Length: 266
Picture 1 (cartoon, rainbow, N blue to C red):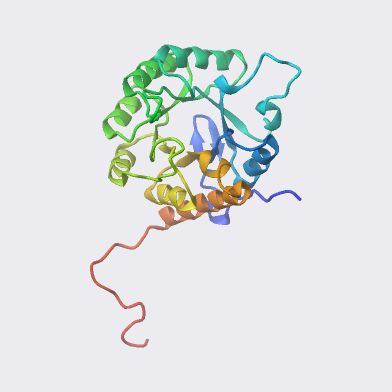
Picture 2 (picture 1 turned 120 degrees about the vertical axis):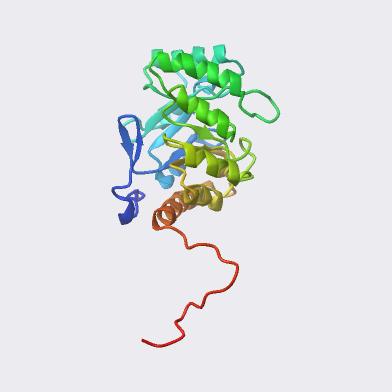
């Protein structure tokens, strides 16, 4: 049975715009850590995502007789977002980005330059250096970066059309650790903000959307859940709920109670 992927009616015209592309789903999903490609396929469909990110360094292009994960992604249905995961220098990330173009991938690129093997935190200086060069080469650079408002602003100022601050370290499942920084980033941003990394469960994704994030990128939370398929559905609905709540506007927080029922009848 095919899985329904139509968004909530209130969100039909509320699209995510990346360059000259528009998407109904605000969830970007990854491809790693699944027990099988079959489970990955089912989770992608259940999530309602329209963008799938792929780590180029982890794809075996050498053996033509052996299937790789790209054989399990319907490129007519999903937009591929190549990423430079596993790169620890600006030079290495630039090389992988150029390789993605040679292989026929689109101009979309998740730029990831890591600074530490244990924390997998981004190297802000190397990320900035690589972004400057790749922007000049007409890549649509989407930088994975720490939740530093100053660095996010600098990346935006050099021409990054999207910024992707972390919620918490990759695969940690800690959710959004610093809401204050993320709120500042969202308030000063003039480009889409995609929360990338650290989501552990559906409520984490909903919080990011309620705060005003334009999208959420996640992988481990689904792939490593006890039931990945159920979690994929949960993430889909969490993003829709969070987006609807943001558009609706929450009530102000108050110190004291306010009666729900009027004191006098009408």
